[in-house]
Every structure is written in structure tokens, then in C-alpha cells.
Length: 163
Image 1 (cartoon, rainbow, N blue to C red):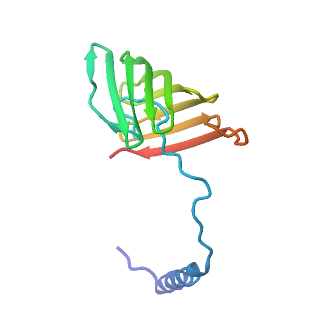
Image 2 (cartoon, rainbow, N blue to C red):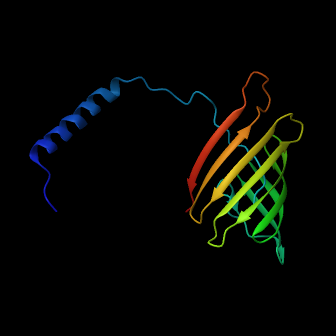
């Protein structure tokens, strides 16, 4: 491996020194919106947002699973191998939810799914479209506001890696 050119090393050091000198002068701020850590829908084992538990029961392609987090838990019933349908209920510290959805599992283990979520006692609905790989996922979701009539609808994107 060739050593870096001395001019590049000097430029990199000057840039780093400038950033370190200016950084303490920049205003710092906290997150403007409170984080939303509520359980949004019940889920089965591959969900990254929830602490997975083993399926409670499995008979052929039908599975009854539970999942939980520090703010709530859920129970879901799923049927199907390649094409699957799922229905679930869940409870968080804030509200109870019900979800229905389905999707397709590809031969390599990847999956494409869609879920509609309804919170009991609320007027809002949620829709999530998700693509799962073995070690990561992409999720697009649409949420109507929970309690405030002044909030606008939310369109979210999330990506993650499973450990």
C-alpha cells in the first residue's frame, strides 16, 4: 500500500483541526419532536422493532406468535407459506391496536408485506409496506395523527439491520 501524499495529510489535519475548533461554537439543540416509542402493530418473529419470542403454536402453515417490547406486547396469527395473511392485536402503554395484512415470501427468504393498522378509540389508520432481507429491512409507512387535530399525516421511511 502506498503512503498518503504529505500535502494530503497536511490538508486532512488542517480540515480536522478546523472542524474541531468550530464545533464547540455551533448551537446545539435537542430533538424538536418527542420520540414515538409506542407499539404500532403486533408482529411475528422477524420484526426488528420488537423483542422476538418463539411461536406459541404452529400447525402446518398456521402460526400463533407473540412479540413484545418495553412499551407493549402483541399476539398475531399468520397463515400461509409463500403467500401469507396475518391478523393481530396488541396493547401498548398508550392504546390498543388491531392489524391485518399479508405478503409474499420469496424462495431466498426475502419477504414483501403490507399491513393496515387501526388503533382502538382513535380515528386514525396506518399503512406499512415492508421489504425484508435476512439481515436487514426497508419500511415505508403512512400514519394519520393520533390525538391532535392540528398534526398532519405522516409519511415515514425506515431501514434497519438485524443483529
